[in-house]
Length: 274
Image (cartoon, rainbow, N blue to C red; front, side, top):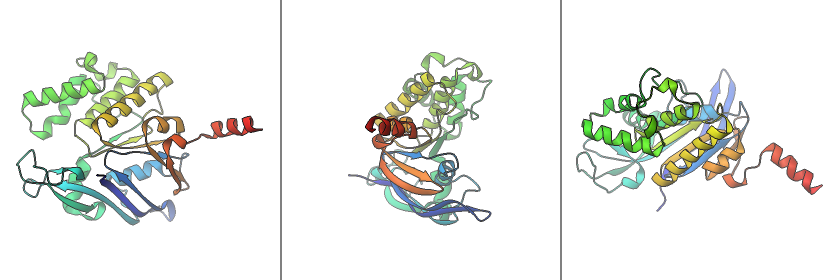
C-alpha cells in the first residue's frame, strides 16, 4: 500500500510583490525520492525551506499537508505507514492525521523536528569536536540511555562509512567526510523526510560520487523519503525516482528522473541527429 507523506496544493510564495513560487501542486509518497531541477533563481531552495517550516518562509497562498501517524497518548509522530501499529514509547496505537503544516500550531514544531536538511556547505558541524562528539550532541535532547546512544551512533556512522574517523576532529575531515558527517547527524533524528539542497555543489567529482552513492544506498535500504535540489541533471538521475522541473517559480514538468536531460546532453543528441 502506498502512503502519501506530503501533499502540496496551489502553493505560492511572494516577497515584495515579486512572485518566487507560483501555484505549485505535487505529492511525495512515503519512501519516495524527488528531485527539484532548475537554474539558479527557479525557486528550488525557497521550496525546500517552505516544506521544512523555516522561519520567514510561510506560504503566501496554498497549503502543505503532512500525512502522519501519531500517538494520542505520548504525542510521538511517525510516517503514515505506522497507523495501527503500537507506539514504541508507550504502547498506544498510532492513529492517522492529516496536518495542515503551516496552519497547525499543535503539530508544526513536532513535524519540523522530524525533518532534516543537508546544505551544500557544512556549517552545522562543531569543528573543534570529534566525529563521535558531533553525533553525541544530536542525541542530548532525546534522553536515551547512554548505551543506546552509543549503539545508534555506531550504527549510523557505519551507514555513512565514517567509523574509521570516529575519534578524529571534524575540522580535519575532507570535504566529502564532512558532508557524510552532516548526513549522519541528520539521520540521527530519524527524519520523516530529508531535504538536500545542492548537496554536492562544492565538491570535486570523486567526492560527489561518494555522497551520491551514500544517499542512494541509505534511502533505498531504509525506505526514507528524500527531496534533493540540484542544477545537475546527472545527479538527480542517480539518486531520485522522479523530478520536478522548475522555471521562474512554476513547475514546467514532472517526469521520471531517468528521463532528465541537460542542455549539453540535449545539444549532443541534436548534433548526432543532424
